Length: 285
Picture 1 (cartoon, one colour):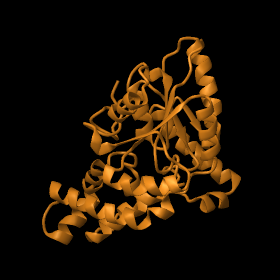
Picture 2 (cartoon, one colour; picture 1 turned 180 degrees about the vertical axis):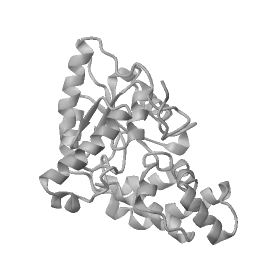
Picture 3 (cartoon, helix red, strand yellow; picture 1 turned 120 degrees about the vertical axis):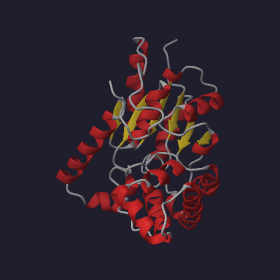
């Protein structure tokens, strides 16, 4: 029998729901504002995909943000502040959850095609389990319910470490990671899949790299769309993507190509490209 892909493990915001990954961006900005910080969107966006405590710690560690905190609070931030910001983030997410769980265009038909092929559906996320307990029911009401969801606070370390991928594989009953596809919208998603020995597929149009809602995206000229896609593709490939697609609708075709490569005994990831302990730092060769 020809080798087949057995599972696709999706990211959450910006990949399957929440076109543009706007919920985490806006909720994080609002959470920082509650502590008197005016954090630029680009600073918030940079660690996207990482576990939320890592994400918050990274933003607070930015030189300009650290100086803002010192002026506002009269002291340097510490680990207790990371937890406090995370608590506020959960409140902000709860306020906007229902509106931020709309499936991205084409998701329903892609899931139907994958399930017809016997492919199981998993998910990894930088959100905590407490946040996902808010988001999962809202997404399920809109038609998206993966077979398995593993959160960043349920494993030893979040992305780009491979532990959430391995936990998904265990729950879904997949023993060979070369039979697994990871689909995500951030560089750290690509590194997570690559480090796990899976096939990493980047998704561009709905990604946090573009950070545009569906209506905003459609107002772009064809030239501007392509320029932004080109920049996003470059970042995803540099982080370890094996394939990059504009939309999820292209994923079934990618899986067919991967299965042809598996027939030639190709494996997905010969070595990791990002250090497991440093979500944003490229490994040095």
